[in-house]
Image 1 (cartoon, rainbow, N blue to C red):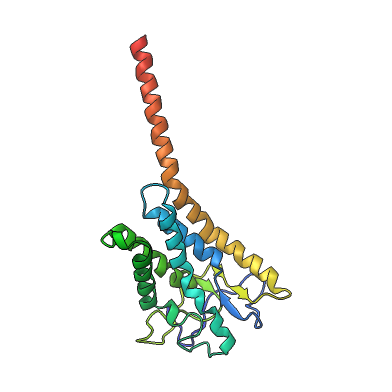
Image 2: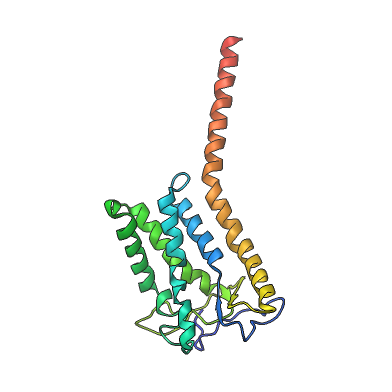
Amino acid sequence: MLDPSGAAQGPPPAPTATPPSAGIAMSSLFGHALAGLAISAACTRSRPPRRVWAFAVACAVAPDLDWFMEFFQLSQRASLAHRGISHSLLAALLIAVAAMLIGFRPQLRSARLWTCMLAASFSHGLLDACTFGGTGVAFLLPFSNARFVGAWQPIFVSPIPLSGKLLDWLLFSLGTEIVWIGLPAAVVFFAPQTMQRLRLSMQRLRLRWKQSEESS
């Protein structure tokens, strides 16, 4: 859903509206890292190698390096502000390319690795668009400064910096990330291993059943 004003739209949050003194409003690095970890698991047939999940997590959190622009007191609609150019589709593509060149140069022809890094990079903007609070995401920069937000926003922003009652707000937002990001990520991450163990267990049972029949 496109919001012409650049502000995220959605139902009012349970405790209160986003505190006006919250500084930068963003999904926490915890949620983005979980998304990167889950994507790395989904793109591999078993437990993802350390290098793969490390670079996937790095791609998923990299766009939030723009947080330091808050010190320059830029307009929320500025291209260099939070959820601006660093959260665009072009930036996600460049982040994925950088990850492949740095971490997987001998495997540049691997479609699986490209899918993993691209999905991890694109996941950041998607999660931010599904976050209640703050501005929309400028997916189309530098071609358009339009800000996009999701029609469904179950995740609540994490206030940065923290002070006073904002700690309670952070804990509440982390709770929504655990429910909507953490639990699905755990399912994706552990499902392949669980299925593999079940298959091995079934094979052992069949072997024992066959051996018992032969012995009888």
